[in-house]
Image 1 (spheres, one colour):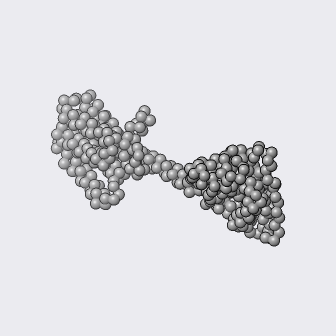
Image 2 (spheres, rainbow, N blue to C red):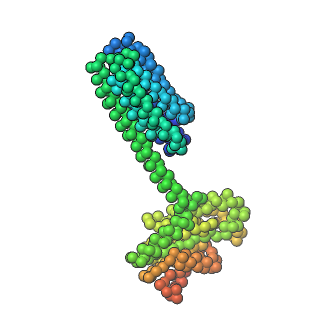
Image 3 (cartoon, rainbow, N blue to C red):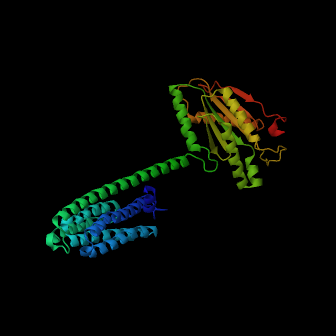
Amino acid sequence: MINYLARLWSLGTQDEPARWRRQIALTNQVGIFAAAATAPYQIFFIFYGLWPYLGLFCANLIFIAVYLSVVYLNHRKRHVLARKVMLCNACSHAFIATWFVSSGAGVHLFYFAIGSFIALVSDRGNNKLQAVQPIAIGALFVTSHFAFAGTNALTPLPQNVLDVMFAVSALGVLTLSAIFSFLFHREIDLAEQELTLNNNRLSELSSTDTLTGLANRRQLDKLLAQACTRLQRRFQPLSLVMCDVDFFKAYNDKLGHIAGDVALQRVADALRNAVSRQGDLVARYGGEEFAVVLPNTDEQGARRVADALRYAIADLHLPRADGDGCDQLTISVGATTLSTPAAQVSPEQLLQRADEALYLAKANGRNRAEHLYLETSSVDMMLVDTPPLKATDTAFS
């Protein structure tokens, strides 16, 4: 039942901004519950004696129909008209019902619920309307209370019946006000959850490369900075690997940029799958260049990862377009490792040293990996080569 009602009062909220969705849903909810709140009076008139109150009974049927029409208007995207119809119908209903049975029945107390509705759905940009509407509601309440007291009503009820109806009206107003507040706060909670989700998505987009789905340069710089900060508190080996697709400009020139984008996406997926340890980060550094951050990884580990990256790309069997006799797309890899404690090391130092190793790999014939240590002193740096893949290796046979 609740799920059905939720679907009913959600009519018209599709494809609307969050603020409008809350107002539309609340207007639907008020229309549905106002119609439901009129039902007990109709039942009372049927059992107490319908004929003396036939006029009010028929008027209530019209008011109920108008309340429910608000849902239809919202469904038809007539949101402003729906709110106006809701407000005018509720004000007229309370006024006419009080006129029929006197203010002793407490029907005019529903103006308090109407005031709550206005406060929740009023247009913040219209200050004059915000000031006039509460005054108008107050004037209608005062007029109903004094003008239709006692015998001034069209069909006054006995005092004992009025006492029961007043209690029912007061209970109905409190219930409606509580329901309105609960539903409005529920919509606010949903809006906040949606806002949090959107913020998370925006944060993810701001740190993700749109083409490859890898971390972008911004995220790479952030993680490297965090890793360097951790080194000052607790030293652990830190490695950085840089990869560059060999002769990629020729690939784009020969096969086109669309094919180049597809190739980069496949390369990115292969690199991501080759680095499976939690805490490692694969990022697109720019163009056809990628970076892999390897916390708590020594020189041996960095070399293993570098080789794994080369083999992963070779296993893709992507065609190469440089015409040098090798028919498979390959990558050159440069790695660096900080293996001894350092008072302070910056991401720029790591990137520069890894880039130097990458340049060395290209200078030595590409399709290979080179490793350079990053020591506490720039003078104490060691060069460690990894051999190129042999012709007998699967990827290059």
